[in-house]
Length: 416
Ligand code: CTP
Image 1 (tube, rainbow, N blue to C red):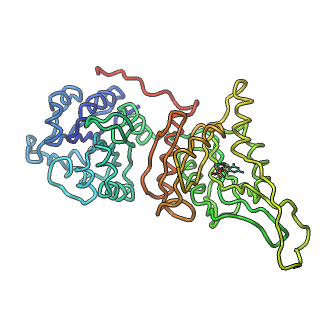
Image 2 (tube, rainbow, N blue to C red):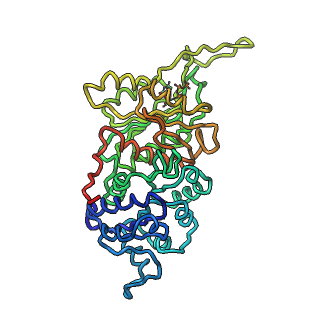
């Protein structure tokens, strides 16, 4: 898969540095030429000799160790790279990258390269959550640097939380996707719902909500760029839908239900990002209503719950056929986790993306979002404030790893 590719593997000083040996070995077994750069801190956790043996190349640790007079080493490595991956990436290297520092071999090479850069952060949970680190990650994201999210679990420092280095196989999968041009959603049909439904009272009046459709649009756009054939079923939205996707306009919840259920059997994944009105007027007048007495009472009736209908359909059809991977959204203002887990179980979805719309930078109308993703086992991914488009891409990456149609994980054929 990586035959003919040169990958510069940057290793920084965290306990997860030992996992970089497995990563190096996996990359070599996929045919890549791996050139390792270690920071001084990294060499305290794992010996350069280990990486030299696995990569079959000398390991660079010192900017001034110019053993080959015909080249300037950091420029040579920066130019040779088809991709630079930093795993594990400590808070320190992330800060250096964000600020353009070049005080050792790795940071200097990172500044000099024009190749795509992938970083896999690993650190203590509180360090990862620190606004300085989150701000630096945001800066790197805005420059087009890719990330492999840290995992959640037992950390070496004793805490349980987010901060573990992603598994080497997961990092390899992302590298193959970036270099071999294999798009994780290629050949997949996905349906995304977006916007706020409109529930009409008469030809000129309606009930709706604050949804702008931005998150749904970002999801449709990201799925398109990751190779999917995208159908966007949308209600009222603030802007035009992205190009290159099939748009089905369904103003009301009932129309959206019909459009979704008709297409459901054909889909590999369904993402319900629309804000569907829970109630609609009991009566929809043919003509504009005339004013009458001082007060009026509006009778509302329950709308169908589309996500619930999808969940029910999946349960009824799951044995006989392959059903789509279903993801729901939940905009909450209180008790986010409890409501999210309750909705996940009740509506029978595979994942539920919860956002606390009371937080600044999250929810309706905003260009950014902050989300927690829950599966049957609990919290599976937590994404700090960042543009909705970046969030969307990471959500699809997660789906493409968890869905029944996900490609097999790369086999570990290397010596480790
Ligand atoms: N949803 C739906 N049809 C509805 C209401 C909601 O498909 N009539 C979907 C939304 O698209 C979203 C998920 O259900 O993916 C959660 O929406 P939310 O309004 O938070 O769910 P409710 O069950 O209506 O939540 P609550 O009990 O808080 O009103």
